[in-house]
Length: 591
Image (cartoon, rainbow, N blue to C red; front, side, top):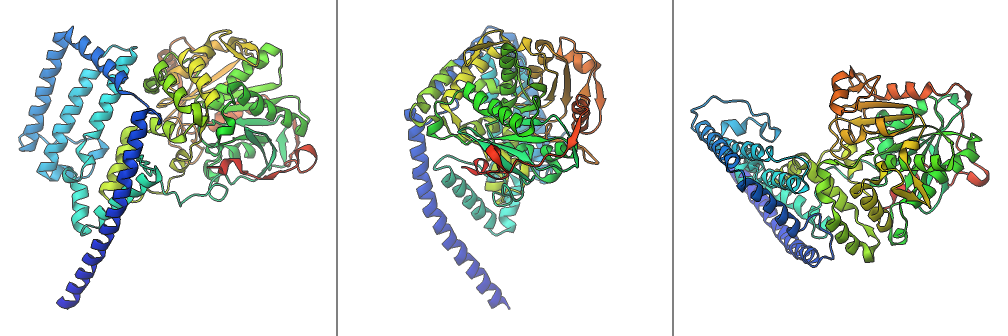
């Protein structure tokens, strides 16, 4: 029996040795790829989210400010000392065991193991002290915002949960798996490096779990029109009658459109169909070098304006409702101002989701956008004609680095686990490229110069636009924890827009707060108010809290503007707009 067990163990060791040899060969290749990637970044041929000079300037400003206020620095030094003393007392069991809320340390082994507990407590003490210092920085300075943001990135990277020798959970799995977790983690790491060609492309989801058109984006419909920038999908009805006025969905073109049509149970498109609406959606192209010269105005004319022309021809209706999400909502807002300048009243109502109109305070995402970064981006895209998808994906991940970077470092690499199947993260990793002309114009004119809120500051196709001239009824959704479109930068639309406005503040963030279907136990509620004071804080103070999804509230608002019903429309199948291919179409599947 012992001989059999010994033979099995020997076979396992031999297999692991052979596997380690294969991984070592892959590691050598990956190392060369990493060096090549580093050379590209150093030479400037690979765009970097931040440069050393900008960071040096930011931290120089920070320390200059600290030196001019020595009392503040002394206070923080005292706080650090107090925090560290508490950490050492905890290490030796001299203080009460206060529950740790940080989910990085939720496993009981962080408290049971005295060494791990000391690492944890010293780190958390340092974290609290650093945050106390950063909280004293005056608001409004981009240099101070950069210091706060990148200091947080460095502190998050130093967490003992990120390292095998200081993570008791990972060490336990290493022992129990007899080294298997370490080999699996190394394999996961090499796979991510290989996929990124030397750049660490962290897998956040099981890329085999979902297929667009099979598991996601399954609502039945037809592509009835297409051009260089988009395919227009018309969906099959799910009711016998429909509201006469059709609705056009304009999604963001930073990701694929199917965030609006995920699984059937959380598909906003399917929900709107079930409310008796005739639904069309734009599926944007994934740009290539051929789209380099497509600018923001082209996205308007070849996107929603071209779609509205087709919808009018297909339905015979002179007016349509429209919905825009994220940058798609910014495009819709600009288009409404463009149409207002032309005296064109074809839009019956407009809905925007997580759409900023005031870019004075864009939150932490502003650390990545300034004139220097814009010039670097211009240089990088001069030959390519577009910005690769991973740059924005990396940027958005850094805004929530604990959840979207370091949690996967721990699970994927230290513990050798595979990411679980999660539809929202699957969509999130399915990013698109951005054409240079559009991106540079948008970042300069809208993001940096805040031109959308300034009358006549923006010009589209020779027409100066002013969003205060918009009289279209508008439903505006923002979400409280949005790290991409801070709700305080969405709220000013209640003042800027010239027509009736219904503002709703949903719970959660940029994606989960929007894709919040009305199920039995909806996670997030929403706030509404009959009036809109100038201050966002005053809005919250007077607003009424509602439980459940905001979707039914919006559906009621939309239905109240429509009394005419017609027999349900089926997707066009003949003539100029005959079905080109079944939904979700081919544009959404392009990589």
